[in-house]
Image (tube, rainbow, N blue to C red; front, side, top):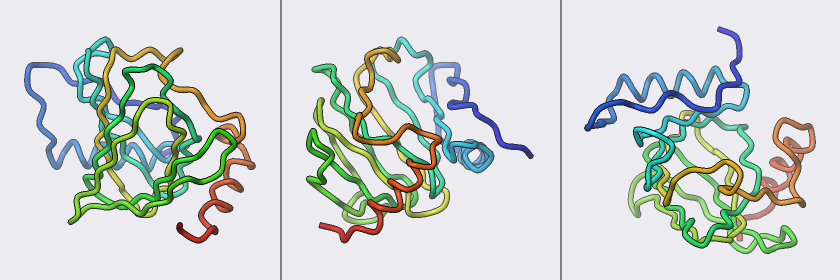
Length: 171
């Protein structure tokens, strides 16, 4: 199977969504086949939903460019369902403020990020799955602001950035 550039699977239909083994297998396969090494599985029925819920299936080596959510209502909650992340927050100049390993198990792997906080993470385990939730509706033009001090996705510089930040000692 060749690599694909699709960013998300289709939104589910109906009044009820349940995460099943089949949906997990489908998301994991899609993330492994993606050139981005991740795929989003939206849980909300459409992108105009007032609450945006999504599953993010990810593989080590995916690059989540440091970003912030600038809208005042854009608090983001993340729960690790499977796997492990190294989660970072940064100041406006790209200096690390926090550096945490977050995984499944106890204590529960949960992160809550206020609007305007620069953040990113590295995926540390194969087939990592997170559940994300934030206020909608989704608007690609206003949802994220990417850090100008971090390289763009898909570049050699982004791979170097991930290696450099991973090589730093945890705080």
